[in-house]
Image (cartoon, rainbow, N blue to C red; front, side, top):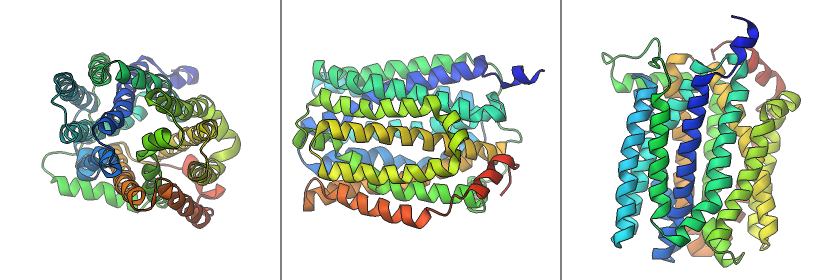
Length: 412
C-alpha cells in the first residue's frame, strides 16, 4: 500500500462520520427542546437546571463500567443496539408530550436513559476511530467528526429545535428518534469486526478491568492533567449553560428561537475551529491551543456576567465555540495516539467520568447560586474560577512535553 492510500479517510470512516452526524442532529434537537419543555412546566431555576444535572448523572454512575463494556465487545454492534434502545425511549417521551402526560419527572427519566446510552456511544465511537484512520490522520478525522457534529447539532439543530418546539413540543423528540434510527442503519453498513485485540475477557472481573484503565490514566501525566483540568472547568461552564435559557429570556429578551440562535453562534465558531483545526494546531502547537483556550473560558464567563446585549453574548459564544473545537481535537488525538488499543474504551470513559463529575456538580451549583444570589451569580463564580485555573495550569502544557506526546509511543 502506498503512503497516500494509507492516509485516506476511507468509506468506513465515512459511514462512522455520517452516523455520528445524524445522531448529533437529533441530540441537538433534544438539547434545545428539553430545557424549553421544562421551562414551560416551571419557572423554578433549580428545576430547570435539574434537567442538566439529571442528564449528566449517568456519566457519574456508568461511565467507568461503560468503558469496560466497550473494551469487551464489538464496538460497532454495541452502538447499534444502544441506538435502537434510545429510539424507543424518545418515541415514548414524544407520545407522552402529545397526550399531555409529560411531567418534569418523566423528562428527567428519559434524559437519564438517553445519556446512559450516550456514554457507550461516545466511548465506542472514539475507540473505533484509530481502527479506521491512520495515526497521522487522527487530527483530520477528529476535525471532521467535530465539524459534522457542529453543523448538525449546533448550526442546524439549534434554530430548528426551537422552531419545531414552537410548532409542537413533541416534534423535536420524535425527530431525534428518527436520527438515532438512521445512525443505527449507517453503523450496520460498516464492514469488519471491531472487538478490541487483545480484548478483555469475561474471566476477569469488571472491577479489575476498570482499575486497569484508571491506573493507566493516573500514570500518564499529560492525559491525567488534561482530564482533571476539564473536570474543574466543567463545573463552572455547565453552571453557566444550565441557566442560559433563562438568561436569554430574562436578560437578553429572546424567545425560544432566539435561544436556539445563541446556540447556533457557538456552533458557527465550532465549525470554524473544526475546519481549520488540524492546520492551526500544527501551526501554533497544542501548547498554545490549550493556553489560548483557557483565556477564552475566562472571557466567556465575564461576558455572560456583565453583558445584556444579545450580539455581544452571541460573539462570545462563537469565540468559545472555536476554542471548544480545537480543545476537543487536541484532547481526542492525544488520547488516541497515546493509549493502547485495548484500553481505549476504559481510558476514554475515565475522561468522560471526570468531565461528567464537573458537569453534574455545575448544573446543581448553577441553579443554587442563581436562586440564592441572582441570575448572574454563576457567571461571576465561573469567571473567578477560570482565572485561578488558568494561572495555576499555564506552565503544565509546555512545548517539550506536548512534542514528546505527539512523537512518542503509546506509553506513560
